[in-house]
Length: 375
Image (tube, rainbow, N blue to C red; front, side, top):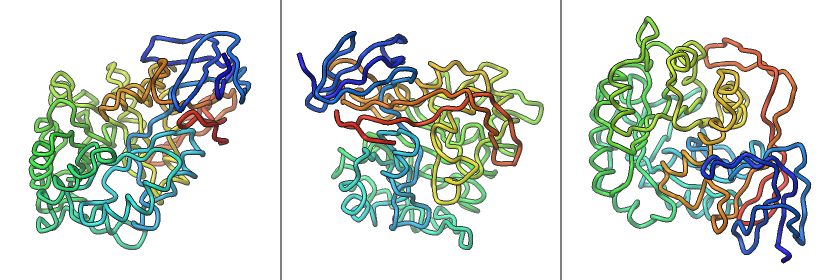
């Protein structure tokens, strides 16, 4: 049988199937059509010496390019880091989602899914010169509108986003989170929560999250980190994991520190998902992209298969999209071809601390809906 596309001879790592072996992977009619040896395709790509994974999913990005000051171009970013699905987390709210959908989502080659901000206009004032926390004004918390828009676009909107912390919600503290939880509950979808500096405290917000909700910026630096001043994981974090709260990295410009990450890793607490929180103010550093963030977890000692799981199977579960994050026959025909290069890299955290690692992950190509895309 001749397929539409075959990636031949790559090391296939698909944690969802427990697969780590050199294989050919075939695609036909927009789906994965086979895994084996000697598969034939009209378009045949040599994957020898490279790693083929399910399509990488960046669970935290900002890609409302042109509509918000922090947005980056989704397709250019996807090609940079071999991410076939990027999840925009709160760039748009119910007041401007229609423009995001028409001008960006529906025109993009990469798949864009959305955590809709409960704030009416999303994150509207985020730049090097203007910084206004959208959750400072409770008049902008638009629960009814968010539920209506989410129900109208279930193919795009997979959750509700809200941001709290001294920088994001000011004197309102935890109030916006309560509104966001109410909206997510009414819409029947999960919530993603941003936390920055206290108030409210890290422990206070984790205790309010439900199974399947995502706490992003999970390894943020002191103060208001997941571990106390002595590096011990906070009890609320352990309770949250036991309850089914999901912990996402969301590196960004201020939310990943080596000190926190080393303390968490040293106690065996790895993130559920690894994401970049890429936006206009961190795409050139310190976050850069998803593969750079994944490389940081290799430097922390996280096994390669687990790092790949945290950018494929795990975010697919968080999104409630089981057709993503796997190369199982019949699943969506997305895949990422990457390389683990023996080339030293200096890995910077948001505080300027650098850890040097002898290897780095790089993008070599990807498959979206069964079609090859150069990176």
